Image (cartoon, rainbow, N blue to C red; front, side, top):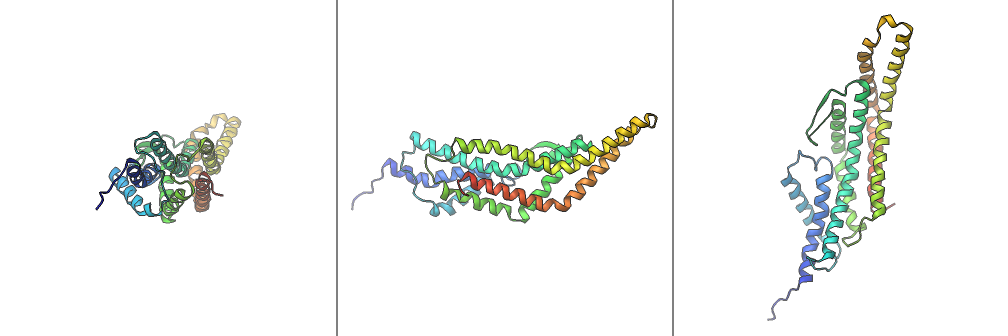
Length: 261
């Protein structure tokens, strides 16, 4: 009986079939909303990444036969981390645009001082932003958005197999340019409330100019606050279509990063 001979490239390939997918999945879970927040312990995220890696490993094609300690293996590892982080960041921008929209509304309404600690990020955000963040998190889970995100992400193993090539410079520039979409979408979402508060402030400015002795600016703050809250209440009627449209744009951008139509 001949002894089993195992060389270094074969060991690197065996390790790569599990380690490289783990790097891509783990980096994605560290960034993606809900799972990648501080509310989920690190051990849970690592365990979930290991479980997903074991489940999808049979569906992964052949991996490059390189030495585990070579420069090529390091490049492949960095590419997997970059792919997972980029796709997780694309989903994170969907959540952050609602936080930015809430900050815009709060600053115009005079609620910028009413801030509270966001347990997911560990920073202080206005109460309006926290309200929107809780709303979209519940909608995201109720509409099985996390399942769609995982489906689009796991498809990357077919469209971008494990190799030294992955996300290029053009993909990174598109990811950076996508930040403008986040700010523009947040502005469009907050524009009705900002316009309503601006009309109230202009009206009080004209009235104060016409009758300075009435000191109407003292009433401007509570009335602007009421109009801002009323605008937020009106916007809640169309909140679900806005969230669905923005979610579809996010999923389309994730597919675009993979080179899919």
